[in-house]
Image (cartoon, rainbow, N blue to C red; front, side, top):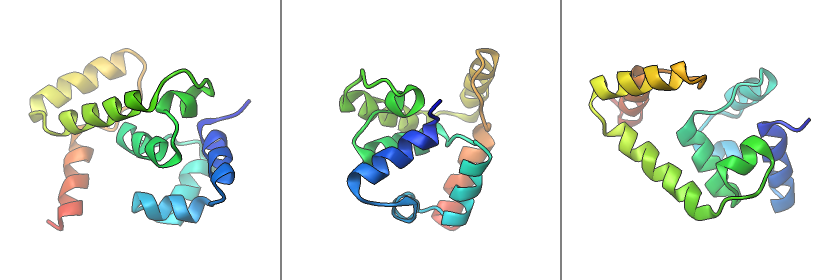
Length: 122
């Protein structure tokens, strides 16, 4: 059974590029990405949206292998991610609770805030 990362590798191969290119585009360390892949750790939603956009496919395709959605939906997911980042922390905690209750893996709003601080050099 193909996994998210198997489908990413397949799309990379179709485009004639490799994981180092993807890591560079994502601003990630190749070592870190390789470890996440080895352990079957899926990327955060915003990272998955960026990977899908870079590969010209949808998050749905990377997750399920079924190509049913258009790139517009990938852009919509990216817009949702940007909207989530701008939410007040209290709202993020409520959203995290809802996602967890419905079986989605979350990292918590604190991680998003910390990632943004790190990216801003704070």
